[in-house]
Length: 219
Image (cartoon, rainbow, N blue to C red; front, side, top):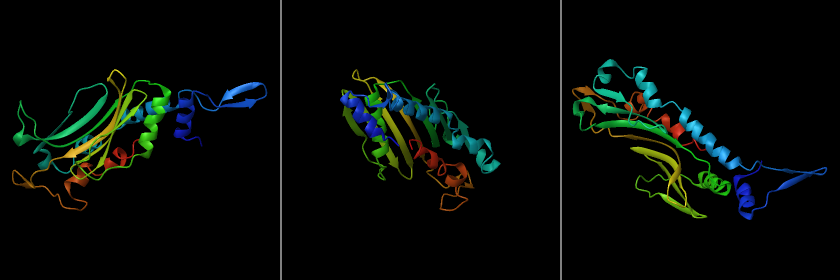
């Protein structure tokens, strides 16, 4: 199996590897394999069904709790899917008090192949931080900038990459994130279980289960 770093090495040197077959030279890799993989990631993120929304629409966990919260789209953007839970007691026109959200973003434009391969190399090599205050990693490559956030935490999780062209315009933004802000266990006299166990709100809502996709979409 050809590794992405091998493709990158070929692109940087400017020489296409070829295999001799009779008198015909056949490229061993398509010129856009790395871009194609990034596009596949974008489609994967676009087609993912927000688990927080799925669980809510299925009626979790009961009517009593559903009356305390409201579910709604967080943003309206063609390159993002998102959904959030809002505390209805602290929700009004000017301010929405979020208690949970989940989102994906999938902006993709084709970029130079050697840059695309570098992005894949970064995605494959970087390991997550278990520190909620970790800073964004920044990589400069052929006048392009690649930014990587990969944080696994309790109140929020982020797995994303963004690419900026030499004019500093963002042309790729791929990722997933979720966040929770359950500041109390008692909402209007209704007890919300937050302790470990199958009945706690993080398990019921899909907040934990969503990380199975979110932390691994790039693999």
